[in-house]
Image (tube, rainbow, N blue to C red; front, side):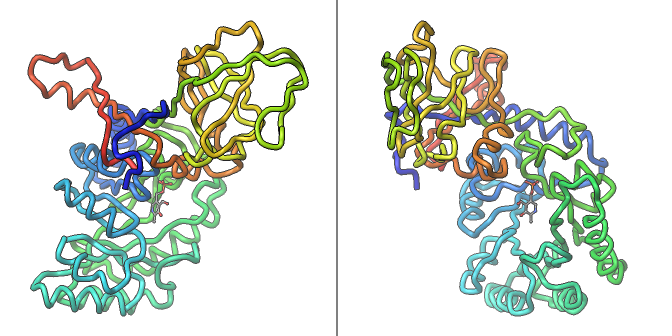
Length: 401
Ligand SMILES: Cc1ncc(COP(=O)(O)O)c(C=O)c1O
């Protein structure tokens, strides 16, 4: 639920560029083998980008399957009649089996009781339950252990109320160029799959996330599960960068107050910053309640008219402050870039995540519901008669969380 109810009285917005998303799809498709299918991972509200808008765009681009975290997310896509197959990558309690099957949603399973619950729902509804069997080859998280995999796959394939759509594993260390562990996981997975070679028609085998696709393209199998790369980011610094991906998300605000203060002025809670000169302190309406972490206090930077300024003082719940020289041209209402490009300069997601000492994924997922999402989508504009195809449309979304 969006607490703003469509009223964004604070100037704080994300620009989510669906044109760039489409560009990234094309770039990744060119890089993959022509026969490799893509499962677009859009869980956690498409890593904060907006699950409906990103899901609809990917589906229209022909992405075969969309991976979500929960039944709620799957239903949000179903409600919008998104055509791609939908797979819940996460856990769903058995009590929700009826709803999963009734809506033709595929569920990840790692245990027999999960298969049984879905099969029971399918019998009742006179349908077949779609599943992807997950094998834990070394992440030590979700999925059955390799020694139990043969029996579980046999049960899934042999149950006439179950349609086994996929079998997969997840790499724990695919961002390491030294692929020793990834290789070990891959061959363990392959050994299990090979036993079923003759009965896997219509079953997609998949193991690679973005890092694996970039570092180990030979492990593509039938399908790859890509999240962060579709959104234009490399999973980590050390991942090989063979593709011109473009970040889809940027974060902006406006200066709401500027004050000139003398040296030795304490700024913000606990006066964690004290000015050393005559300076201007600019106030921006973004705080940790928006996902702009307190870890950015005295560490982050912002861009105004292509110039960088340091975030000073402690980031508070709804506000942050940055410091500029007394003669700088920073004024009230000026646009401030917190993440993304401005006049040829950039605050990158890697930089922001390093200030926050967290993975880039976390920095994106923390972007909260109080941030308005504005969608850039020239394709939507071009469909309307009388509008030029080059003019870009900024759409504000009710669904952005
Ligand atoms: C099971 C699974 N597959 C694929 C992905 C996609 O990972 P990435 O965004 O690094 O491509 C995720 C994301 O966490 C995941 O949990």
